[in-house]
Image (cartoon, rainbow over all chains, first blue to last red; front, side):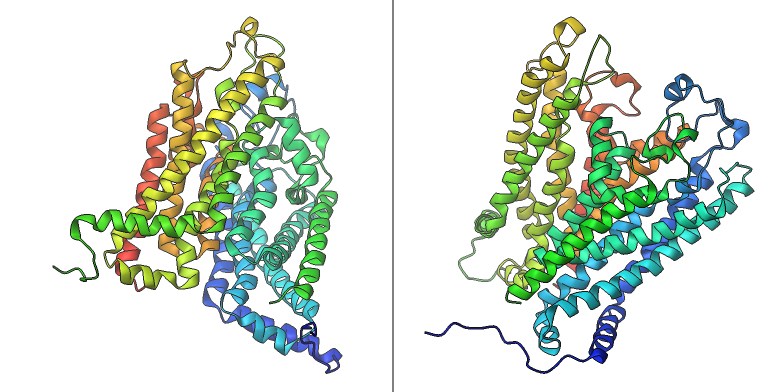
Length: 301
Length: 271
């Protein structure tokens, strides 16, 4: 009896191959109409939510009953003694649609991987590029880059248009310095990009699209949702926003802690510092990628 | 007779379809595990919520029934997966073509799937909700929810708690029907689950940053998750934007809309 060993090409890998691999994966992505449409939908969703919040959701100062920042009930706000003239809006508020755009991007990232398994294309892919880890790397780079561009367009558009609309309606927007604004916008784009790579790695691990999307949403979006909708005890959500990939939403924090009377993600405050929260997501993504690369090499396709 | 003569009796058409769907669902290894996950996830999260709550004195502004049913919010994600997979698995494997050849009346297939998924969720959700209430009854008194603070132990003999418990099971069933309808309409499991969870989470997140009271109220009234979960409230019901049963009705409308969309797509499009 001889043991059956998986086929590995003996052809030497050259440096130019990786560029070709990237090109192949990019072709796979851009030729599926639904995925490209999904990225456009993600941009529209994020910008749309921002415009909704600045256009209809927040009342102008004249008609406001009190100076409560959004996301805070009047009882909380009254007891919290907000003595600062709090603006109605922060730019983070205009990025409230990020979670919805993230769901759309996660669905596309899932299918970018799981479609290979569904149609058996993975066998062709791995026959063309027998070094399996490089396939995963190429896919991660393509989906990450596409998601970053999508996130940049979405976050930039949302902040730009929603701020314009708010000024047009006579709302005051919390002024932040340009490095902060840049960090919030680029950070949101990076959050979406890394979350897409995270989802791709999960898809390579579990290979089932339904399970992948659920895992991605429950780990990245659900803790954020729980904390922002006051659905759970503060201690629990605080803990979840430190250890789960959802910690990365901290990059959207527009103000330092002392500014806020009530510290909750709805008012723009997260338990971790912006880039520390983002690092938590990156850590999870690296873990998932390593496991995915290991399993991709070990398992039959 | 327009039916094929392959032993299909018109009177038994429905029950045979149901039996066929049941065989498909029962023989999938994932179904049992996912149902177990619904029960385990719901109970675990409910118990964790009970354990993390504290009530030092009277009037702790917490609804003990709603608190002990918190796990329903976690269980619904798995309920959505079960319902979505019941449909999308057939499309991803091509099985749907065999199914529709065997049962050419497509709406009968959808009805059978809806009935079976609903029944399974009734069983798993029932166990989960009963155990969650029991956990609340056992854990909450140790965290200050004592009769001395105005909180008698949770009991299904209390009409409001009974409504919250039964309503939570109904809520899970409606989430399953909503997911089934969406999955039938879009066919791809990833897209369907993304849509279901996006729909559930979007309204509460937007409502949380909207300070305009009227907008806030309307958003909560039409949100499938927020309105549907009003059924769990047992204190301060008058301050809710809708009555508990109206709230569950909103979710029922969403589910009916999704099933209608699914039925239209199923009967008009190529499989």
